[in-house]
Figure 1 (cartoon, rainbow, N blue to C red):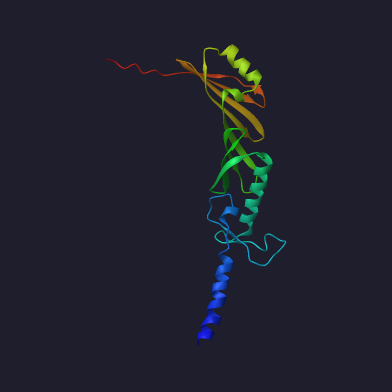
Figure 2 (figure 1 turned 180 degrees about the vertical axis):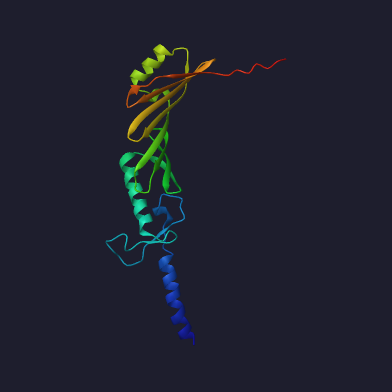
Length: 188
């Protein structure tokens, strides 16, 4: 009876051990899916990979496409933090000292990226234009954006009475937008 029990339990424990060899560190995402590889070797990644909760090979393909696209667009990125929203992949990271966010679709296409910059990151021509035309204003924020293949630079300037939005599309300054600040004067 003991031998029969051992013969039944051993394959169960062995199969549990094989599927417990998951490596969450292989996936850069905080997702419900995880990858397990059976112990036998295989050259075909997809035939040797099991997607436990997504139940599809297309999700594994999406992960790979997104990572390849990310590495292509942001080769020197550090401090990556991944998440998913619906069918898109969102990554927060640092590149060249700038905190950046990027969104990829499931095919690995970069939908857009936004980088928080500082005045020192501005091109010389833009900095000169701001200093000569808007000398009384302070730079409130600088953002680099890539959207639909266009590079954009947004600079927000402010003084005591107004805010100015400057937008460069692919290096060309667009029409500036100026807004007056609403100042509430409380009655005493």
